[in-house]
Amino acid sequence: MKEPKGAASPSPLVGVGREVDQDWEEGYAPPLSVDACTPPPGPLPQGEEEPHAHAPTVRSRAEAMWADDRASTGLGMRLDDVAAGRARLSLTITAAMTNGHGICHGGFIFSLADSAMAFAANQRGEADVAQHATITFLRPGRVGETLVAEAEERTRVGRSGMYDVRVSTADGALVAEFRGHTRTLRPEPRSAARPVERTEE
Image (cartoon, rainbow, N blue to C red; front, side, top):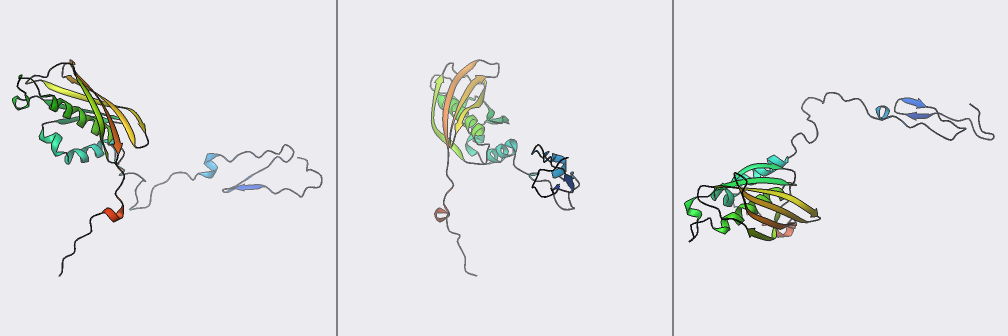
């Protein structure tokens, strides 16, 4: 390898335990390989765990939220499935849910769709709530039928999301179409937090 005139004698580039020669004529230095820069994986020291080993998952967040959802569970809803941007809830219509026409009151169908949207939206560890929603009823629900609400995220930009929910019977007959918009709540500032009450000993 020839040395450029007037240049000092080159020194090799040193990279993580090995020397990498530089091509002074072409002005090119071969890149370090990933293996050269990354130590091989090995066992963690005793008492340490992999990073994010216990990070909340979509399912674990949904289960924690479901445990506190008195409204959905009180109405008899069931959380059947959750996945990224999706959720499926179901509800069996009882006589107590009928209106004066003997069919399922629309408020119960709306509530089922709204709860399905909530579980599709609240998967990032933030608090998302409904901002606006519309529903179109296409078929009555009848006592004894099981309604299934399948929610899917359509778009999410910043703190705003949009979700479509299809409500159908267990055998696939379409009952209602729901579209809802959500908004992520901002965390409360520290000054707005309720002060801790202290008791005199």
